[in-house]
Length: 232
Image (cartoon, rainbow, N blue to C red; front, side, top):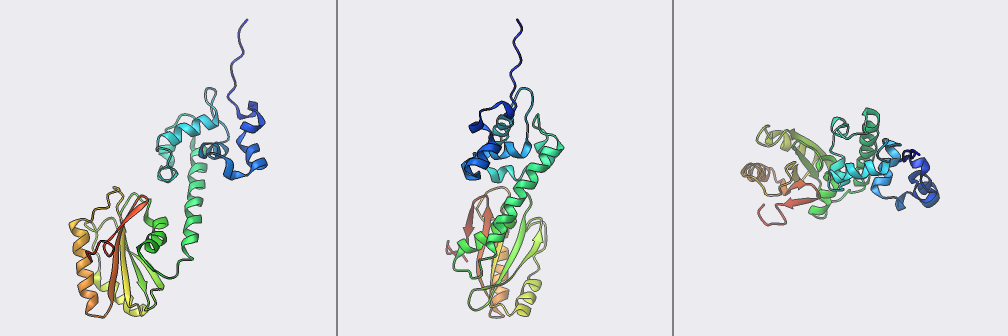
């Protein structure tokens, strides 16, 4: 007698093992990352449940949701069982999470140290695959009056316009500025170009009684602070 093929559908699981039912009954916080992703994709394949497929996707990024958020729709579609619709759903959900964290940073009105700068800018540039250079403008109470992208594509690939930085600082009435850029490579070691632009901006700012308070290099979940290391 031929055995019936085993169904990997979540519908055939025990109630406690069904991600959707578990979320409704016990809350979302109790679910694993794989179970949450399984809810997003809805179904797996004939040979693999949605949860198993989610586990395989997570394993490819060392179970790091931030790394998963960097995958493009096309990269997600390389996994067997993930079509365009499922890939778009995953990408959209992770983008909502990133924006939610960005909303939290709006509460940071005053800079008391390098960690505040990191918390303020990481949601915007910490996970980018290209380099961006940002300036934070502060008043005499170290409150943020403005933050702006100065260049995109890397310090060596784009011109950092010192005159534009200082012009904007004067227009805003800022007395302090903080430089920051990301390193998509993950390294936190400042390059020669990083040091040169820091010194260039510091020298130019001093002539206008504007202080360069710090320069942060942001990578992954960590950062390098020129001020903290005493090399500003």
